[in-house]
Image (cartoon, rainbow, N blue to C red; front, side, top):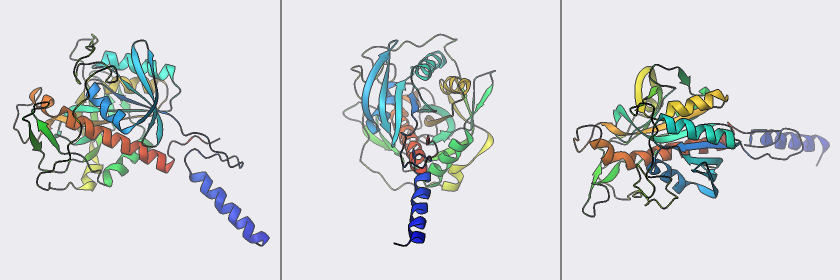
Length: 319
């Protein structure tokens, strides 16, 4: 090989290393581990589908809360269940961010919205009633738009009633999609009081699902008639002024992340919303029919987001 050819080959190798996630730019060819991301869900039914997709290496208990370290979507993560409500979300998020070295925060869960049941929303801002607004990291929002634009395949069917041996399969008439943009808000219907979980309880009010809580119903492989597909371009962009999602935790976690200068993003799927094939009268009837379906779709979108981060090297920590 000539000197010129050898130099050209070395330049190509160096250029390739620069774009790989976690690769050092120091010239020694070494690679640092990619950054660790905190991934949160509020209820056992929100954490369970994340754990099903993750490889958990260890679980540790701190102040009565369980933290699971491992990988999800190719990214190192610390997974935890916050508990329901703003107070629990504040306390668990603060504990996680203070106890573990993480570089960002992802929330995955269910919510209410004018959007269709089983759709996933990714608001650009989050706020508490009467409080400040917290903006999602713009680079992370663009990654979410790429996930939405490629038409993430989400579930659209769920047994009804849940946990009934005689349940029938209920399916949305459309293909659920990921919608990016708009405004999210977290309310506090509990008047500043923490919601206490029930040890050994169900997958809504129970404690961490790894603490002997019965597993949620897993996804169904059954199919109904082919759905009407979603317009990917519409799904990827929502008007900034649209109020798209209301939950009870995300703004608190966003507040804690923002206080530490960390990026955050939330994937909230609709458990109660529009186009209900059962015609149920809103919350809480819709919630208890569709929360598992919504939680699985939120987890699928959040996992795809982490996979996109890992593949693109958007959050890579290079020496």
